Image 1 (spheres, rainbow, N blue to C red):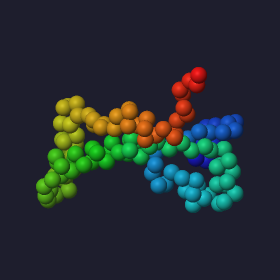
Image 2 (cartoon, rainbow, N blue to C red; image 1 turned 60 degrees about the horizontal axis):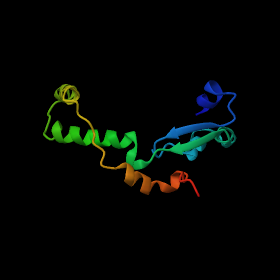
Image 3 (cartoon, rainbow, N blue to C red; image 1 turned 135 degrees about the horizontal axis):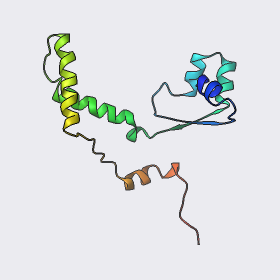
Image 4 (cartoon, rainbow, N blue to C red; image 1 turned 135 degrees about the vertical axis):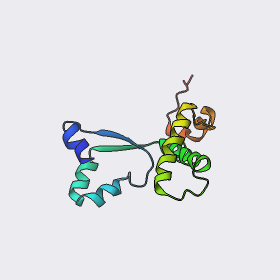
Length: 125
């Protein structure tokens, strides 16, 4: 975050940062990484926006790891070398098949669940 603020956008008064909901992505993490005055200085210029937990890329990764576990790692693999060979082979097969994650979270459900996060765009008469 310091590099973002001081190197990439030194003139910006406010920097909007979009993050997933990983526990390390918080203002408190800056206080753990830097002395309080430095953390405070950075936080004055940063505005955090978090992606919804149910729709983040992290969920897609977790889903894919579950598929890997069920399709490839569901048996004993006795040697590390065999494991190192199995995973790329599974990955090639999965990519060749054009595997996709099908979200069941519909736009309508998203609008209902996230209504408070979005302004009311309905025109008033």
